[in-house]
Image 1: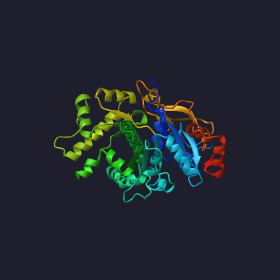
Image 2: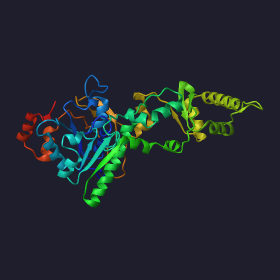
Image 3: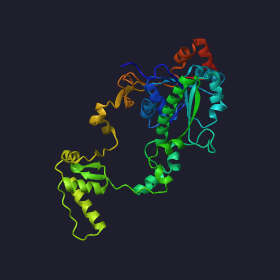
Image 4: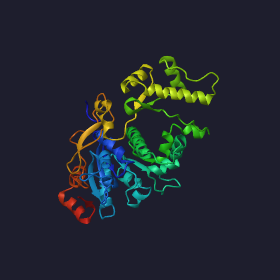
Length: 389
């Protein structure tokens, strides 16, 4: 291994919740030094689904491996402190509502003035300068307004409800990483940093592989149910539409056609589906069924209940998807490893990683980044600009 790809980069992270913290967690896993700037009240996700002891699993997953400094942006000396840190940073990430950073004197114009090489990512719902820039925009809001929720409800025949995955936030973080690395590439060529205005609204539309249906005014056909009852009281998803599955089972697996001569199409579809249901569930075992599907070259996946057992699967273990870590109270915990696997570079976190308490690195970070003395740091703490648990 030749080291971490982003080693040497300094990231000043003002982001909270998901959009932003996921990006900076991945930058940290790739070797960047990430200093999370947390407000006095703390990131709201610290207590989201919190255990009896230790930080929440959500906060741990998105922020482990980062250093932490706690700053009250309203306090005397806070703005100057941020300017000093920004002067040493390569990257700044924030997901406040547009205008908030400017209000504190730490927006793009302010920070780029002290560091012209700075790359700054701003994630917001509707963009920094759009007509709806001031609206609150959590992931479910964007899922609703991009048509995702309504589309899922109509295609599944269910009541409109949000998907249980912060897609707008996570995708925005990933596109934010792409934009940051692109801006760093331009920095190498021009010597100039730049501001990235990333709207979650744009991200969802860009990533939506169904967008062409709406743009062409063609409503997509609702997908047929692909989940089947399998042996051993298990369930299995088999890809492919009904027609293709019938062709494979009838021509390559000996399944007889149960439809009488002259049957109409609805009857034929119903009887063939019933025949396939019986055929699939009638295998001697789940393994026998999957062996048949593999022989027919039909892609399948077992439907697992969401819980700890999904991380006990063979490939999950083999790929190192989960890593043992420690939370802020010293508890042994598990979290998700980053997905990057390089042939020559390192990535990810190890078992020595832990989550930091609010302001845990106030002293060490300011000494390392700015060369501040203990007296200077103590003065900032006395003014209320610096806070620690």
